[in-house]
Length: 105
Image (cartoon, rainbow, N blue to C red):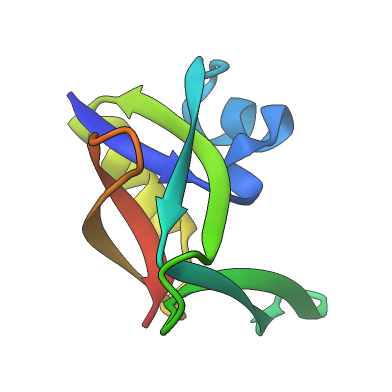
């Protein structure tokens, strides 16, 4: 099993049902020393606005999100779901949990 920190669309119940065919249970957590940046991604019907995590020079910058425990199979589904504007990296959250997160590519 893997830990995945979500700060955006993967927290959506609709997205979870579409991707995993189930709802995930998570725990609130925080990623310190990072901030969110606006990102435009071209989709089937035009450009869409999203956010992406980037490192910050200010260690007090905090991203609030949720940690989900998911299978390797489900993590592979997320890899396909995220666009090539994102890359998956391992981070340590405020709680001390090591988790995967999708950051700016």
